Length: 270
Image (cartoon, rainbow, N blue to C red; front, side):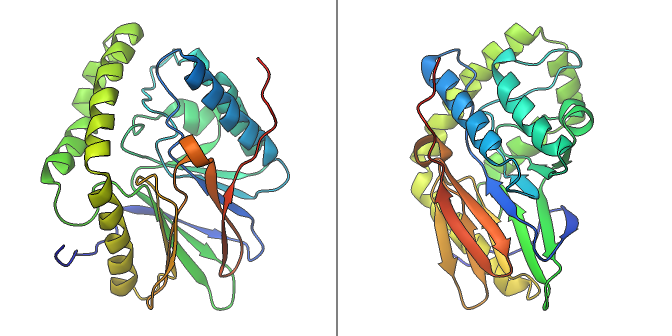
């Protein structure tokens, strides 16, 4: 693979306390299909969010919490209710919640922002911990970074076009989600076929960003469904990995201290 040009995508920035407890998780891909597997996954995510009460100060969702999400003005899928309620409970208790858009769920809007109290971040988030020296972390979903994959980058711009979003909103929600089922299956096949290249690309993007931006201490990406915790000469790269099979997430509770963990939940009752 050739050298990847590093450029931080447009970002939001926040400062967190020295002793802030931070959780990063991603790629739960809560399903569109009304299946037993999809219902169980939603319960697991809801249980995970419930387990964080009193144990987290900052929650960063690094995209693809949903396999597809489109926010209509007055309609949302009832199957996500427990998960949305879990996020709102954390937010209302004082947890700072951020949602960095992924490649499956970038059509979020006022429900998350106004009702749930979540700050929506289109591309990337920089967190500055008030330690001495200050620790600076870049968090992004990881799709479309670096060189190559021009087709996907063009598609990403098209899908985020405001006119397209307006036109999609004119569809009846049942039709919209039916169309999403088709595109989601197509996207999943594409992802499986390009998995090794995607893992390598994210690793090299992280290394390149750490080299290009000397003030960055750590880069956290998702998207690959592969857990990572690597120490380069230039800094650290982490990836929370695949929630679908390992229920993995990242804990950052002190300067320079990161841990990849797996959520262990009790048997869930129907």
